[in-house]
Length: 102
Image (tube, rainbow, N blue to C red; front, side, top):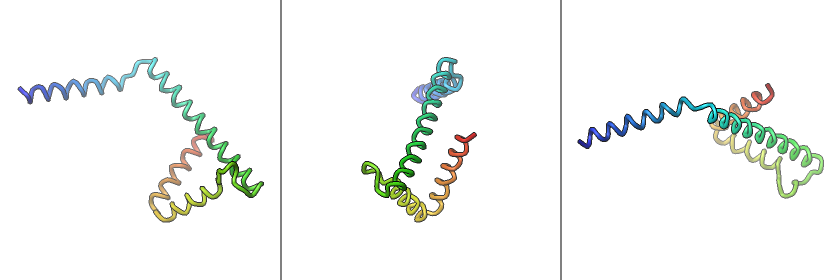
């Protein structure tokens, strides 16, 4: 009897997963809006990063305690220590950046 219940539970669970794949239009719209929001926030973060780099290069000091150039230098140094992971991370970031430009 226990095996029958466990199998029934599994099939019920898999049916629920299959129904999630066919989302209703309202849910698709909300997910699309959330995706657009994340995209806009990422674009805004890139603009802030570029602004921080530019201001720090012009002033020569960290901006409000935010050492952008120093943090980038540290990150690149860490990527150099772990070769494959660093290259993979750079490729992912580059692909995100090129998608944003299109």
